[in-house]
Amino acid sequence: MVVEQLRIGGDNLSYIVWCPESKMAALIDAGMDISPQSVFLKKNGLKLLYIISTHHHYDHTAMVGELKELTGALSFIGTSDAVFLKGAVDGTLKDDQELSVGTILLKVLETPGHTPGSICIIDDNDRSLFTGDTLFIGDCGRADLPGGDVKALFGSIQRLKALPQDLTVCPGHDYGERPSDTLYHQIRTNRTMLAKDIDTFLGLP
Image (cartoon, rainbow, N blue to C red; front, side, top):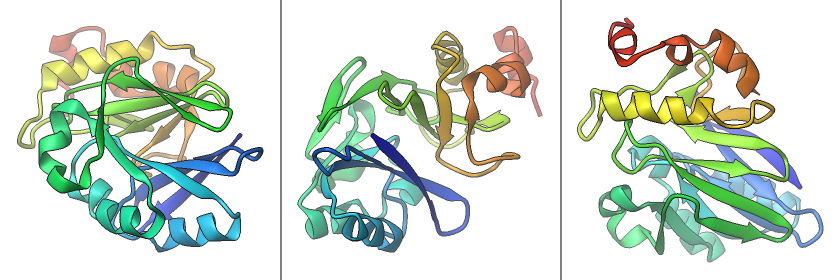
């Protein structure tokens, strides 16, 4: 299987996960410009099955409707964020739910905090962890926007810390020193993952 990281606009990152055998694909976070995704899908002869949004914020979901219309793909988002996309959602995703894309198996991990319905996606084939705005390289998403919950975000980060450390963290924005990194390295260097307790986490600038 193959993971393609695409820069959408400024620092937003979108991902196409695809199976070379079946040419089936899933897209994680459509963003605000579908031109890069459309070009990549056409160039590689891929059939887009799913559009998965890690959370409802506009910079990740603005083009979901247009991409659905263009490709016929089904749109999914975490259950608690579905209300924000209204007619652009075909289904919701819950903890431990799985989606098959050819030989690829994508597993859902509920990680609330940045938004109530934030999710991460684990691709066991490529050992990738798509974190949206829950975890960045060197930092985490903010929790001071409507629906944010800093204590829930801290809990979600603890959950990510318990995952296999050979996973590659693929965030929703390129805010760090590099656009992706191993979970092993992030656990040891990311200030939000180094916070031992909620009080330390709350005290981070």
